[in-house]
Length: 130
Image (tube, rainbow, N blue to C red):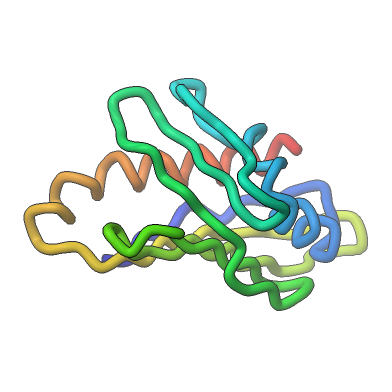
Protein backbone atom coordinates (compact mmCIF):
# COMPACT_ATOMS: atom_id res chain seq x y z
CA UNK A 1 0.00 0.00 0.00
CA UNK A 2 1.34 3.42 -0.99
CA UNK A 3 -0.08 6.72 0.22
CA UNK A 4 1.16 10.24 -0.50
CA UNK A 5 0.56 13.38 1.51
CA UNK A 6 -0.10 16.68 -0.15
CA UNK A 7 3.06 18.52 -1.17
CA UNK A 8 3.64 21.47 1.16
CA UNK A 9 6.00 24.44 1.12
CA UNK A 10 8.10 25.24 4.16
CA UNK A 11 10.13 28.30 5.08
CA UNK A 12 13.26 26.21 5.49
CA UNK A 13 15.95 25.43 2.93
CA UNK A 14 16.13 21.81 1.79
CA UNK A 15 19.19 21.24 4.00
CA UNK A 16 17.47 22.77 7.06
CA UNK A 17 14.33 20.71 6.48
CA UNK A 18 16.38 17.54 6.05
CA UNK A 19 18.18 18.25 9.34
CA UNK A 20 14.82 18.95 11.02
CA UNK A 21 13.35 15.61 9.88
CA UNK A 22 16.52 13.71 10.80
CA UNK A 23 16.29 14.95 14.41
CA UNK A 24 13.60 12.58 15.74
CA UNK A 25 12.64 14.76 18.73
CA UNK A 26 11.21 17.28 16.23
CA UNK A 27 8.46 14.82 15.29
CA UNK A 28 6.70 15.60 18.56
CA UNK A 29 5.86 19.06 17.17
CA UNK A 30 4.46 17.49 13.98
CA UNK A 31 2.12 15.01 15.66
CA UNK A 32 -1.68 15.34 15.55
CA UNK A 33 -3.53 16.73 18.56
CA UNK A 34 -4.83 13.27 19.52
CA UNK A 35 -1.38 11.99 20.43
CA UNK A 36 -1.35 10.03 23.68
CA UNK A 37 2.37 9.19 23.85
CA UNK A 38 5.65 10.45 22.40
CA UNK A 39 9.01 9.23 23.63
CA UNK A 40 12.48 9.53 22.11
CA UNK A 41 14.17 6.13 22.37
CA UNK A 42 17.56 7.08 20.93
CA UNK A 43 19.18 9.66 18.69
CA UNK A 44 17.62 7.89 15.69
CA UNK A 45 14.36 6.45 17.03
CA UNK A 46 11.11 7.31 18.79
CA UNK A 47 7.80 5.76 19.76
CA UNK A 48 4.39 7.38 19.59
CA UNK A 49 0.75 6.46 20.03
CA UNK A 50 -2.45 8.13 18.96
CA UNK A 51 -5.56 7.72 21.09
CA UNK A 52 -7.19 4.38 20.30
CA UNK A 53 -4.23 3.11 18.23
CA UNK A 54 -1.29 0.85 19.11
CA UNK A 55 2.16 2.28 19.78
CA UNK A 56 4.37 2.70 16.72
CA UNK A 57 8.15 2.83 16.98
CA UNK A 58 10.08 4.49 14.13
CA UNK A 59 13.75 4.92 13.41
CA UNK A 60 15.73 6.87 10.83
CA UNK A 61 16.72 4.28 8.21
CA UNK A 62 18.25 6.41 5.48
CA UNK A 63 19.22 10.03 4.84
CA UNK A 64 20.14 11.40 1.42
CA UNK A 65 20.95 14.97 2.38
CA UNK A 66 19.29 17.31 1.48
CA UNK A 67 16.55 15.56 -0.52
CA UNK A 68 15.32 12.52 1.36
CA UNK A 69 14.74 11.18 4.88
CA UNK A 70 13.40 7.64 5.34
CA UNK A 71 11.89 6.50 8.63
CA UNK A 72 10.96 2.86 9.10
CA UNK A 73 9.07 0.78 11.61
CA UNK A 74 11.31 -0.85 14.20
CA UNK A 75 8.93 -3.80 14.56
CA UNK A 76 8.56 -6.41 11.81
CA UNK A 77 4.90 -6.93 12.77
CA UNK A 78 3.80 -3.93 10.69
CA UNK A 79 6.56 -3.30 8.13
CA UNK A 80 6.38 0.18 6.62
CA UNK A 81 8.42 3.24 5.73
CA UNK A 82 7.65 6.94 5.83
CA UNK A 83 9.75 8.92 3.36
CA UNK A 84 10.09 12.69 3.23
CA UNK A 85 10.92 13.77 -0.33
CA UNK A 86 12.35 17.28 -0.20
CA UNK A 87 12.84 19.68 -3.09
CA UNK A 88 14.60 23.03 -2.77
CA UNK A 89 12.57 25.99 -4.03
CA UNK A 90 14.97 28.75 -2.97
CA UNK A 91 17.64 29.40 -0.35
CA UNK A 92 14.93 29.94 2.24
CA UNK A 93 12.16 27.56 1.19
CA UNK A 94 11.55 24.01 0.08
CA UNK A 95 8.71 21.63 -0.60
CA UNK A 96 8.16 18.26 1.02
CA UNK A 97 5.88 15.36 0.25
CA UNK A 98 5.51 12.39 2.59
CA UNK A 99 5.23 8.90 1.14
CA UNK A 100 3.93 6.02 3.25
CA UNK A 101 4.69 2.49 2.00
CA UNK A 102 3.57 -0.59 3.89
CA UNK A 103 2.89 -4.25 3.33
CA UNK A 104 -0.57 -5.10 4.63
CA UNK A 105 -3.10 -7.76 3.80
CA UNK A 106 -6.24 -6.51 2.08
CA UNK A 107 -8.36 -6.38 5.23
CA UNK A 108 -5.72 -4.52 7.24
CA UNK A 109 -5.11 -2.10 4.34
CA UNK A 110 -8.81 -1.22 4.23
CA UNK A 111 -8.82 -0.55 7.98
CA UNK A 112 -5.68 1.60 8.12
CA UNK A 113 -5.85 3.53 4.82
CA UNK A 114 -8.08 6.35 6.13
CA UNK A 115 -6.30 6.92 9.47
CA UNK A 116 -2.84 6.75 7.87
CA UNK A 117 -3.83 9.16 5.07
CA UNK A 118 -5.13 11.61 7.66
CA UNK A 119 -1.99 11.13 9.80
CA UNK A 120 0.52 11.85 7.00
CA UNK A 121 -1.53 14.84 5.82
CA UNK A 122 -1.45 16.20 9.39
CA UNK A 123 2.33 15.73 9.54
CA UNK A 124 2.69 17.54 6.20
CA UNK A 125 0.38 20.38 7.27
CA UNK A 126 2.33 20.80 10.50
CA UNK A 127 5.58 20.92 8.50
CA UNK A 128 4.25 24.06 6.79
CA UNK A 129 4.16 25.75 10.22
CA UNK A 130 7.74 24.99 11.34
